[in-house]
Length: 254
Image 1 (tube, rainbow, N blue to C red):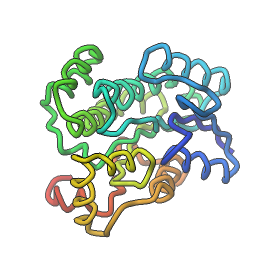
Image 2 (image 1 turned 90 degrees about the vertical axis):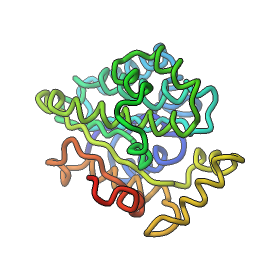
Image 3 (image 1 turned 120 degrees about the vertical axis):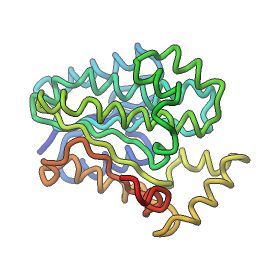
Image 4 (image 1 turned 30 degrees about the vertical axis):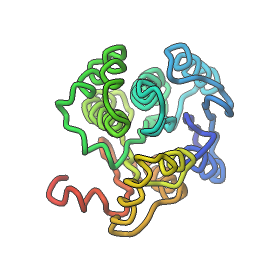
């Protein structure tokens, strides 16, 4: 059986993925800000280091997979927290665990979003993220809206993954990403309750070709496949699990 670590394992997609992996007999260590094997605030450097060191102590012989599921929704305040958790925490923890993943030819599976393509690659917020300039990224995003902060953080995450695939593959680590559509999690419920974004999200859900919203189990099942041996030749891929909404919006772009 495998040995996996994930962040954001207390609720939503992370909790469901943890449940599925444990059900298969794998070992799983969970990092979360409130409830987990390791309690850490991933919005700050010290918390990211605590998470990495805790995982390293638990899995000195290597990891089969690492999944940075922790994330904040577009209604989070201040908006800089979205940049800190959704992007910087994800890439820094992956980088900090690279050697453990290499020991087992493991996979780092990032959690993007079907909203990521809505932000252009030349956006200043993305450029600050990809440059590793957390201070500038946080300052920039504070002057924007929640959608830009969220979608931009996920776009930057995908670009980081794609740009590092060759380097990580040469070390024996696969990088991939899953891009969920609207999924009924506690974070989504926060957005649905927002006076401004809730109505827009509900209208978008009504437009999804396959209809409605996803359940966490539907996303986690795909992630479990991407972590397994059956997906051993999948590398550098972004797997949309969104009921066809990305194809609806970008039918000629893939």
